[in-house]
Image (cartoon, rainbow, N blue to C red; front, side, top):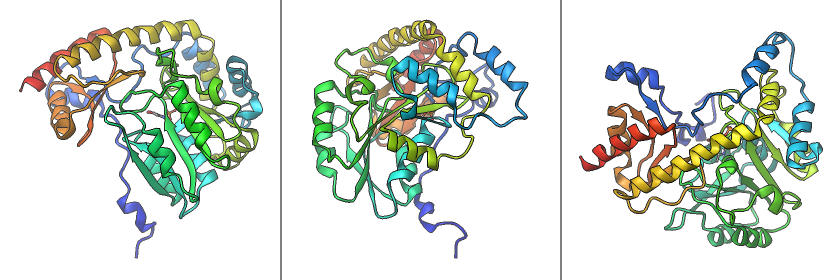
Amino acid sequence: MSLTRPDLAALPSYVPGRNPADLARELGLPEAIKLASNEVPFGPLPGVTEAVALAATQMHRYPDMGVVALREELGKRYGVDPARIATGCGSVALAEHLAKATAVPGDEIVYSWRSFEAYPIITAGTGATSVRVPNTSTHGHDLDAMAAAITDRTRLVLVCNPNNPTGTALRRAELEQFLDAVPADLLVVIDEAYREFITDPEVPDGLELAGDRPNVVVLRTLSKAWGLAGVRVGWLAAPEPVADAVRKVVTPFSVSAIAQPAAIAALQQPEEMQRRVDVIVAERRRVAAALRAWVPDVPVSQSNFVWLPLGDKSAEFGAGCEARGVIVRPFQGDGVRVTIGTPAENDVFLGVAKDVLAG
Ligand SMILES: Cc1ncc(COP(=O)(O)O)c(C=O)c1O
């Protein structure tokens, strides 16, 4: 007799990126490089550290539970009514709240696979059943197959655009066609954690394309381009009744008194955010082009990482990089995701990759 739900035994654990300081110590290197968690490597945006220091003087108080100032700031910046915005402890928590707000045991949640590794965990957490639709041969979502996988038990569809970990992105016409095909009483989440890194003009902004559809939620985060991964702030734009439902199930006070002003300060720096994103995008092109000399089918990435479809060689490649002081993210059987770092970090990675692939 188990004290906790027996079905959790079959649940894969979320794998966090390894700590580079530990690895450096283990290998006897001055430092190791972590390209495993899709963080942006340039530090907090200007003004954020100061806002956090000021907020820290009040840390004995609870945060604003309504997250009013931040929701107003987001509403202004993105042209969304704050009543339609819900915030959470990272967008991953919001995805979890959406699952909780829509699905009960026996229901189904449809998503592409391979995609964000939290989706199966979130689905199982609600007791719902995962319906995984295999990616196309070019590593993107198969929207026709996803539409065909919808049944009368489906309560939620997760569309990851661009997709983590493959970096591929859906274009306007295909996404619109999919949204038209989905039943009106089924909620579709467009997870745009990497929106800021998109350069293909054919890849739509979910808020512009579908933000006003009555069954679409757009998920965004401050963790990636805005540089706040460690502070944990995500947000969503949803039809008002859905935003209300999410606010009901959210863990109270889950966006902390440090996170709220940090996010507001970061949002004051769109130009600097864009400048940093431009560096990452240029590096993404350079790294992908270099990798294609050795792994020809590296897909075009619209994100801050690249995907090496190494299949059964993925774990071996990951271990080879790690043994040389570079932490990447292998998904054995499928491929390896490598976050774009600073130009110097990327140079080290390319040298290591060449070495490992030649081995
Ligand atoms: C597709 C996708 N969605 C959501 C998240 C969650 O980000 P956070 O919880 O930091 O906002 C991630 C993080 O890796 C992601 O890749």
